[in-house]
Structures are given as C-alpha cells and as structure tokens.
Amino acid sequence: MSSALDSRQRDRYSRQLMLEGFDDADQTRLLSSRVLVVGAGGLGSAVIQYLAAAGVGTIGVADDGCVTRSNLQRQVLHGVDDLEDRKVDSAARSVELLNPDVTVETHPDRVEPGTAPSLLEDYDVVVDGLDHFPGRFVCNDVARLQETPFVHGAVYGLEGQTMAFRPGGPCYRCLLPEAPDPGAVPSDEPMGIFPTLPGAIGCLQATEVLKLLLEYGTVLDDHLLRYDATDATLTKTALEPAPDCPVCGPDGVESVEDLAYDDRCRIER
Image (cartoon, rainbow, N blue to C red; front, side, top):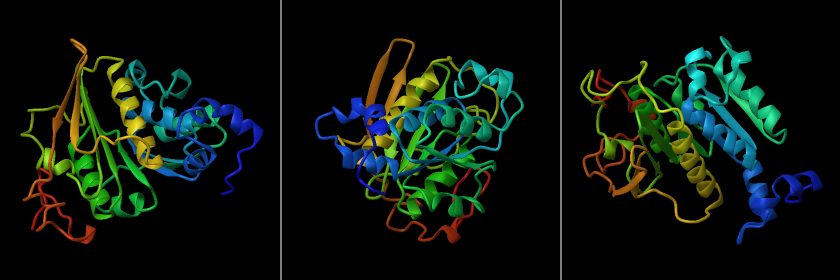
C-alpha cells in the first residue's frame, strides 16, 4: 500500500496525525493491518467500532450468534433493525457506515480447536471478545503457538479486566491454567452485566491493539488491569510467565496439532 494519504483520509484521521510521533507512515500501517475480533457482543462492539474509526484496514469478526433484543442493552454495534440477523453481518454493516476505508471479513462460526488455526493465522492481532472459557483458551493457545498477540478482555457484573499477551511474556494460561469449576463463574450463559462496562473494557482493549500495531507507547503485556465500576477502582497486578504453563512454558506443546482438551479446557498430554 502506498504511504501517501489522500485528502479525505488526511481529514478523517487528522486528530491522530496531530499526535507527537504519529505520522502518515503510522496511519498507512494501520490501514494495512489485519485484526481478528472473536466475539461481536459487548466487548467486540467497542473494539470493532474504535478500530474501524482509527482506520485499521481489515477487521475480521468471528461470532456464530444472532442479534437478540437483550443484546441491545450493551452491544451498541447492533440496533433494532438487526434483530435476528447474524452478528457478523450486523457488524459489517455498521463498519461500512462508519469508515469505507475498512474491510470486514465475516466468520459466522464458533471458534473451536479444529477451526481456530486457519482462522487466526492471517491476522496481526487477535482480540478476545468472548463470554465462554473454551473459546478463550483455544484462541490463547493457537495465538501463542502462531506467535500472534492476543488481547484479552472479560466482564462480569460491574467488574472487568484486560491484558495483552504476546510472545516472550505470559499467556492467558499463566493467569488461569484451566476453566473454573462448573457454576463458579458464568460462562456462555446469561449473566448480569452493567450496560457501560463492556464499552469501558473494550475501549481499553482497542487501545492496546492500536499500540501493538503501531509499536506506540508501553503495551499492557506484563500486568493484568482490573476495573471495578462500583467505586471506579483500577488495579494493576503483575503477571509473569508460569514455568509449568502447558503452552508458553519450556515443556509446553510445540504445535497446534498437539492441542487436545478435557472438559476443564486443560491441555491433554
């Protein structure tokens, strides 16, 4: 892609081009970047819209769900006209209206061990907008083995968290080696969520994605950032690679072909 921006692009992206250390080449880098957002719900809504607005040229959206009325309380990517439509299609329409520079690649399938390797391999960054542990573990494991940064996010009630996992540092399994006991934490089922919380965490995720793509600022790759909306508290907790991690540890699996899971999302040896 040419490094020259046309007059329309220069106007559209003028505010980020005013930033110190941000120039035409950086914007061109964004326009040529490819980001996969797995989940087009509350987190994905914020991530997709802000990445599109910033000019990330190709955004993949993976989600096997359809828009329901109860989604609209927090999933601001969708509207009443999108009810019962596939979320990936609704996302594509929203991005088209927001920024014609951006191409949306739709993947209307559930991310599973058999499909994840081919899905993730063509993207520069993978973003976690999921609400269930099996998909999150698969994305983490495949992204790490393919040496692709994985930007995690999760919300529950009035609490949320985010962190960027990239090669050389810890991965999601260093934070959570296996899925919690059944019933301990809601997964892939209706749960209470404060309406603005996914937007807050999703914006933080989008920020980390842009920093990764641009090598701009300090990426949140060695601390987990937790946000408690009840009292507006932000807490950063250091996280180091776990020496016994089955993915990024010295004795971890070496290939996506070696990935097999039990019912707690543990990697079977």
